[in-house]
Length: 481
Image 1 (tube, rainbow, N blue to C red):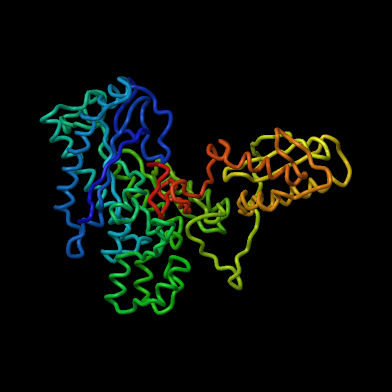
Image 2: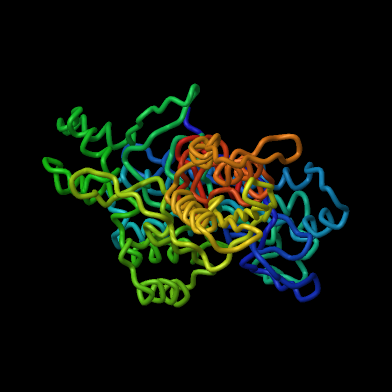
């Protein structure tokens, strides 16, 4: 049975249908931006799987209604039974009793209904389903208030009106990041488009399993064009837009994140925001050749359409990512160093060599070790020039993705006529000294405090930018969960 409702709790921020002049001032949001909160306030979040709400190729509103009412009841119970770390957090959380019911599986719902993601029909569907969820979640909250009482901050809220005499929760809807739970539920993330129609899952013993989107497989088999050759063609890009022998109507329905223009990403987010109390977690994907003006237009479009926040990711702005679309001429992989950032941080160590004291500086950027500088206590001479050359080549290798361990292995053991001793250990040469410093720092706290953005800390897979967050499609890790 497919999961249709999951929940999680976060601290963060609120689009605020309530007047909070007496309670505090919103100063920040949670990492994905969908939940602005007052100081010491919290919010309990849940997501309904829309792909499980389709019956006979139609959205089953009765099933959706029952799920919404059960979810609101459940989330309100969580507020009551939760163990709060501080009394002030408990007071603030229970004064507004915010819950944030959202969705996942929107893209999978659209493909079941044969609706292209980048279409006016999809925008209309987004408004229809989210307005219904908002309406029913308010009804469910009002029903709970009749039995349990209004939230304590009710008198200072917009709900303090004869038309809404009962309300248990100050907010009822939020569209949060669902990277991990959508994988558990076997559906697409939040309101994001399908990221790719094929991807690799990492399992035990570092094995990879190639998976295809199940709804695509089902429909392709039904149409009679599914075969191994098709799987191989799709696996090259994750998209079917450039694959021959696929019906055009399939290409319209099964669009992936990078097939969709920024305009449609924003339109879909804005459609959901209209009927969401708090805010929406989503990533607006731009192509590799996007200009600063394109990014400006995306931000302004989101602002004018009423989005409360927006995350923009330009394809290729990180040199390691899940889906690589552009093919390299001749099939050969091009290796190039990542740019050096304007600011790095690092450690300098002094080590004795036969030529004198060597000062080795290891610098780090957001992805790990990025450069090495080495300098002798005395300047000039052939040794200094060779040390500088070694540092430049090591830096180039590090920024090109060569592992520090491989560099250490190549430098370790190189001998010169004048070895030296340091802390009871022989230093055979200047290159050997650099290797010893690299080895000593390769597992330091600097690496732990500055993990490689783009690489999953759980399985080593590559991260994707989705729902304003970093998500691993291989193991389900989400930086925002």
